[in-house]
Amino acid sequence: MALTSSVTPLSKVDRGEVQKAIDALYPHETYHGWVELRCVYQSGKIAQKFFKRCEVHLANAISDYLEKSGASGRANVYIGRALRDEENRGGARDVSLVQSVSLDIDPVRADASRPATAAECSVAMEAAQYVKGWVGQAYRASYCWVVSSGNGVQLWYPLDTPVDVRGRRRWWEAAQRAWEESCRKALSKSGLS
Image (cartoon, rainbow, N blue to C red; front, side):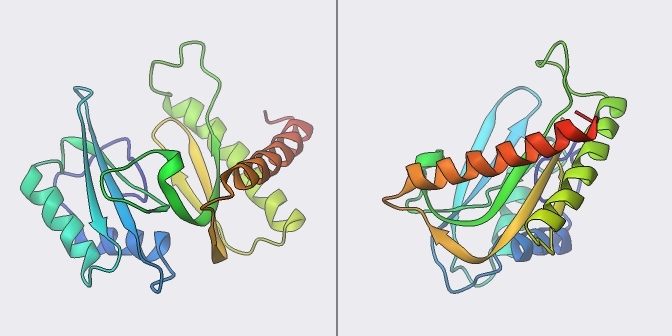
């Protein structure tokens, strides 16, 4: 199991990998909220469940759910990065605390409805590695998770302190867009885009 959707779902839940994902996604244990778990089945069905962040054994609760629901091996699994104010709310407007910023690097495909090929994902990985190096120098970002999204690559940068975005979502969204644009410009200068 990866930190986000994987191309090939695992047939058995690896509790150690779930724990690694939780530790990476939620390093600030003092913050509470709801964690979203989403299972996307090949049929298109989406199952969503929310867990309280303060659960003592959050990784075990998620692993138990995946095993009991039969999602493991039949669905791509997504564990949300941002804490939410309310249970059963999965939209961007429901986020209360942001603990990382991310950049999604997908290959250009003539038909975006089809999955990316291995060759296309390889091109996306090359571009992601370039951007990771550039961000490391330009923003002094010392740590980055490189995550397969199934159709490309995501770069996740943990924040030293979570940002409370309640009441200032527009400011946060504008800052995120400006950061993404600076990354796009650097990538276009590289010739890899």
